[in-house]
Amino acid sequence: MSSNNTATILPFSDNGSASTAYIILNAALVFLMIPGIGLFYAGISRSKNALSIIMITFLTTAVVTIQWILFGFSLTYSETGNPVIGNCDMCGMKNVDQRALLLTAKSVPAADWTWSANGWLHNLSCLGASTPCMRGALDFAGGGPVHMCSGFSGLAYALALGPRTLRNTFRPHNLTLVFLGTALLWFGWFGFNAGSSLDATPRAAMAGLVTTTAAAAAGLSWTFCDLYFSSRMRGISFCSGAVAGLVAITPAAGFVQPWVAIVIGIIAGIACNFGSRIKTFFKIDDAFDAFGIHGVGGVVGSLLTGVFAQKTVAKLDDVAIEGGLIEGNAIQLAYQLAEIGSISAYSFIVSYLLLAVINMFYGLHIRISEDDEVAGVDLTEMGEIAYELVEPADDVILLRPLRVRE
Image 1: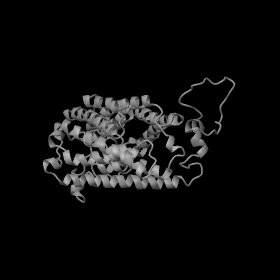
Image 2: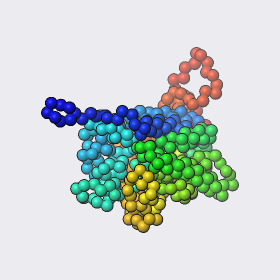
Image 3: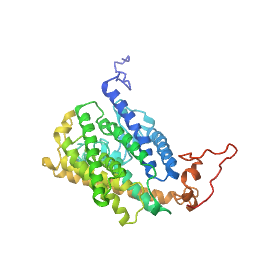
Image 4: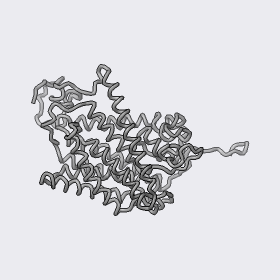
């Protein structure tokens, strides 16, 4: 206590609650998703590009970590920001209280719209009011700020980049890596969804349960779709379906019961399966199905959240919502459509424009040369390879690969 009888406010007052330990554990689980996504896509890619895919995931983690600390958190969660974007009051993580530190990074400014106390999607029912009502689009863990952003950005990138030279010969080179990546993603997604409750509550446990339930249902529905069309029960089908289910349940995880998760998983598996097929019709070379899984899955998950959101599930940690369509709150569908339309349009347009600008600068072209594409990005950009099948001679130093066409 100071001499003028005013209390000294300490920045941190939590001496070790169970919820703090819970957040740390879930953060570690989410970190496992980094090698998971790297291995998943490395297995899907050609062997000559596999190492660069893994490298990109780790480089992105490093860049986004620094960006988030410097200004990303503040632009997303600043309590004095406007309905569209935060401000710099918390840049460098200054002036951040204990609870704010528990929040996790998603995407700016879509995360601000969705989760900030002042975000316009978060307050759709009271836009223009002086006091936020926090009655708007429901998104528990990132169907919009994470998956729609990545899916529609991936679509923009595929269109800006154009088809590969050797597109017709493409096959996933290592399904073992795909299965391993899927397992790490599935495991880490418990932290991603259940951890978004920010507290160790019954609602967090429910979020974890519906997460694995939706993944299982979607893995099966995608597999049986491919079995119907190709008469093959393929490993890549199950893995893609499981990830699609994880994507679709993300916005709904804290709002639905397990039986709903089965419905969402089945619908997501089928919808994302067809979403991955339409790229052929439109001649879009989306090798990793970023749009088919994350874009379509995010849209399906957000829309079904508006249908199936349940008051009783949110009430598990004393959060009050109006429920979804099945509970007589039809306006929730409109709120979810607003999230879908705004975030998908923002992600696609901004990504496409940024790619167009970046591509104008020498040395920053988004497309490599045809010779480098044939040789593989691992050798031409990194000078390394994922698999050393033949031990090189000690006196041979590879400075640049020969341009040999396949």
